[in-house]
Every structure is written in C-alpha cells, then in structure tokens.
Length: 413
Picture 1 (tube, rainbow, N blue to C red):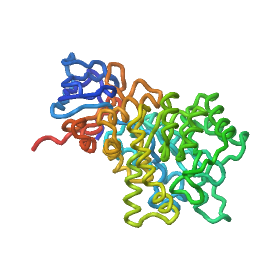
Picture 2: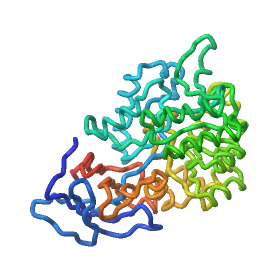
Picture 3: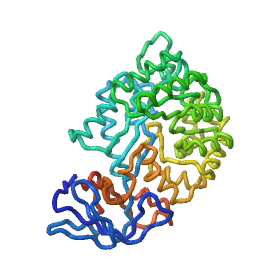
Picture 4: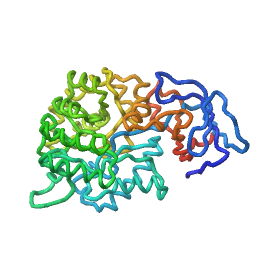
C-alpha cells in the first residue's frame, strides 16, 4: 500500500546508512523528507510539527537500488512463444514485474530492449512518470539494433517463411542511422545495439563481431548527434574494443573481455555492466540440462573464460555498474547480483556503489543513487550491515520512492 507523504514531511531515523559513494557505512543519521526530496540529512534533523517519524533504528538505509540492465517484456524461459504475445500483454506483465522488483528495493531500472514491434516499455515509462500507474522509474532503450543474423535478430528463432517484425535490423551505415533516428523519434532514452553474437540466439557467436567498424561508428555518431548514449551487448574482446573506440558509454556483459580492452575502458571512462548473476543462472541451467543445444554448446565452450573475465573486471579500476539481465532469468533473483559481484572479487562497498552512485553516474543523474539534500527521496533499508554481509541486500523491507512509502517492515510481534 502506498502512503503519500506531503507537508510537513517525514523523518527517517536510520540505525546506519550508506550514502551511495562511500567505502564504508556512515553511522546513525536522520533524514528529513519533504515534497519528494531529501530536505535534510544530519545526526539530528528538524522535526516539523506533524512530521511522521519512521524508526529504522535496526536497519542500514541506502539510496534506492538501480538495475541498469533489465528486460521487462521478455521471458527467456519461454522466449519463442512469449515473443508472440500482444504488446498489451507484454506491457501488463512488465508492469507487474517492475512493481515486484520495486518491492525488492529497485527504484530505477534501465530497460534495454522490448523485442516487440511496438513501444511497450516507452508506454510504461511514460505512464509511471505521469502517475497513471505506480512503478519504478524507467530509463528505456526501446529496441535492440543489430545486423541481420546478429544477436538482435530474434526472428532466427522462427522458420524462414515467417516474417515477424520483432527485430530492428540494419545492414548499412545509412540503414543504421535511420534506425537510430527512429528510436530517438519515438522516445528512447538510450540506444542499445549488439556488436557480437549472444548465447541464447541461434546462428551467431559471442566470440565473433557482427558490426564492421564503420557500421558501429555510424551508430555511435548518430546517437551522439541526437544526444543519446549507447549501450552495447558485447562478448568478444574485439567487440569490447570496437565499442570503446567508437564511443559507447556502456559495455553490457563483456563476456570475453581481455586486459587490453579493460585498460581501454579505464582510459576512456567507459562503464561495464557485467551481469554476473546471469552466468550463475546459465551454469545452473547447463548442469540441469535445461539449455537448448546451441546455447549449451556456446556456454560450455566459454564458461571458464567468462568467469576469468568477470574476475578481471572486478580487479580493475573500471566503472562497474549494477545490471542483471533480468527477464533472461527471474526478477526474483535480481538482488543475487550483489553476491555474484562479491564472489567475483568486488568488495561489498563497491558492489553497493555499483547499484547506487556508479549506476546513477552511468545514467547521467546526480539526483538519484545518493543520500544528500536535494536528491530524490528514493530510500530503502534492510536489517543489519550489508557491507559485513552482502547477502542482506536480499532482505530489503523498507522502500520509499519519490517520497512515498511503498513498503515498511512488519511491526514486531
């Protein structure tokens, strides 16, 4: 149940807090929330008459989590049939998933491709922003742009005689520019492309490039001219290097990245969204015999390289942003990304920053992912100390978004 907080505001009493940028917890603090923003943050804040006091004395309070890679309108467990659902069905299911994820503490999501001929994630973003429906804040790349036969070409899941308009394909610089302009025209916040194959798409290979350099450059240049950042699904080290050289803002997955590409990312300030829990999900499904033969063959071949690449990323100075690829696996597993990141070698504070301050930086926002006066009051809390025990990130039981309390801890018996 949502409780609207208006004047005179609310005071949150925090047992401890993480501000989104630090290397450690910051100790007990109080936060005054007014008009959807953080008005004060201090050991003791003013308490306007009538202000509601929310006691989270046994909790660590953090900014709302940001997941920079989700697919609200895709379900990999039944992808070939689910893609045929109507746009409305996908949007309605996506809205439910978004709200369930919000209850886990994820107040902002970047959705990177709907696999639908229409614009369901744009419609969801707009409806949430307008207050027509409730949900987390959405940042959207409506479609995945790629070449014929690339990871973007999900029509490869169907017989050739079926002409299904669910992929955004382009095979020349002029066609690529046209597709980028179309995404901009209808409201995408980001451009999403793929420059290598993927694991769940038949007929392509994560170890192979699918854009020529001049094609990738045409996409990035067009996006830049229109003021849009580019996120690149990429696997091969050559794909990572191509994306960085052409000006991509984020590398998604970077499955097979090498030391040279990591050094390039560090120098260029390119973000990496390594989706580490996705690998754990894939390996579990592989062991249980649940993958299609073409997916199983590619993951078996590359599994050790992917794990080594994730350790390499974790040990680097690159800007690592939290992203899960939920939709390719259940949203209920999304918070496990924190544990996967720590297992790969990130310290817990850096993992928390990846989902708060660093993720906000990736999105170009200085008003979310942080606890400071003037920031949007996206505030969550969990019992205990998540830096001491990162598994506590799965136990969020207080959620505030835009100053509205979405979820509160159960009262003691």
